[in-house]
Length: 72
Image (tube, rainbow, N blue to C red; front, side):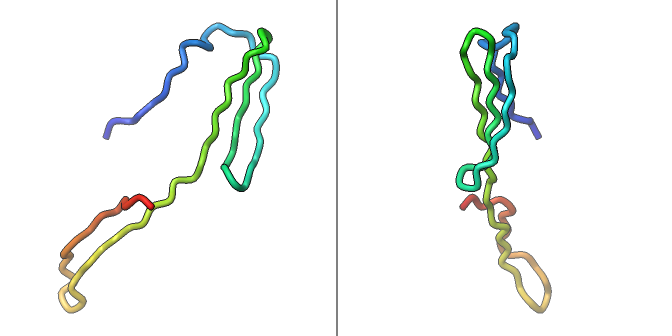
């Protein structure tokens, strides 16, 4: 499985002034990094909801359909 990543080369080498972590129940957690040049990087981390779906025969347990990551 290939891991996806997000790189931000525009902030490479900048000097950090402050780092703040907010907890917002509606949107998830947000990390803000303010740099001394008065720019800011904001990263919001939300919760991904999914459903594990399986259709199977009760007597035999044979799986007819399965999807472990049906997005909601």
